[in-house]
Length: 172
Image (cartoon, rainbow, N blue to C red; front, side, top):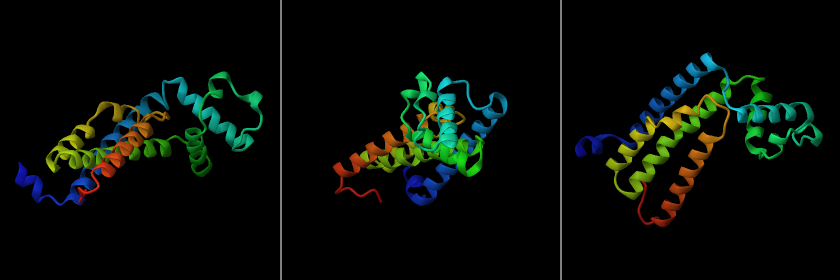
């Protein structure tokens, strides 16, 4: 197994894992969307409502009385991402599902590099394969929630911290 892993060029390995991960997530995202629509969660509709308010009232949503109590506590970053998607593509959810799938698939590479940096290329590959089929990364793709973004950014933060701690150890 070790010789097999050592013979695989790393760039091809990462790209292959990303493409497989992306395919799995897109397939599930579009399948779920075709059956259930956007989501079964109230939070989705809060973000969508916020983004639609940005479309009608502008980015800063000047009419505070139009904010529902649930929307008043929502940070504006993710609704702004939805707003940009609506502004560019119209009020369609497929671009957001694709964005969620790309972010979730990118987590596979981040986990691979974290495992490689901490242990070895073999452990990085095992970790990436685990992430490839990790249910919580796949489950949130068709929703317009920020879970995939949080998972990715948290793992990226850990990778950056590890890289700074082990800066003498190269990722290459």
